[in-house]
Length: 73
Image (cartoon, rainbow, N blue to C red; front, top):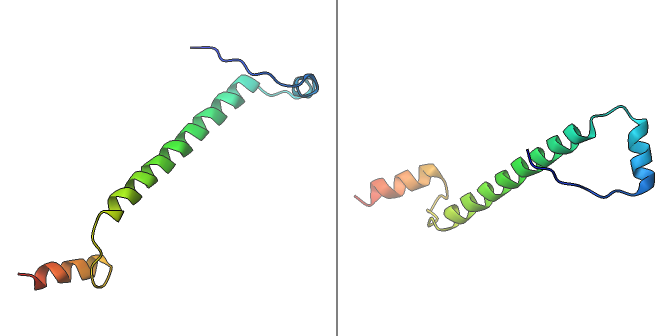
């Protein structure tokens, strides 16, 4: 594993010591959660971009799209 360090105010460090929590594990979980959230957001943005390139149909739904395709033949 790699090590990262974080500076916190002395008073905060003091309060952290008063609580029986594995701070390394808590911070690791938080970072993992934020990365998952970021990746989800990026995936949604990519999907939005892809969907914006698809032309709208008359009805604007999958049903309308299928109808347009059938009518064009």
